[in-house]
Image: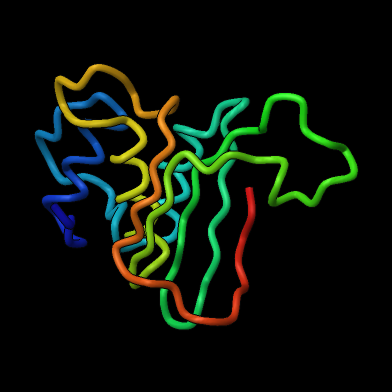
Length: 133
């Protein structure tokens, strides 16, 4: 199911990521860059790493972890394992969708961090720029 930006997704983020029952208005996590950054900071704990890139008009967000025993001479790309990859039309939406995939479904058997998942919602375009973390 593809989550759309807005109040419903923001309330789900409040519940699933922060563990707070959303009884009043919540920050606009899915539409605000600064609010989405709070989501990233809540989940980014070592060894977990993240990277967000703009490709054309879309944004791709990756949750990744270092490979066991990486070759120090290898490129950065080959030193990490992608756990979650999500592409969306905006950076905050990509972050929120990736965060929900990372924590897994309600009542699931884990938090998704040990699984390798790559499920872009839209194919990426050419050209990149972004903000690694």
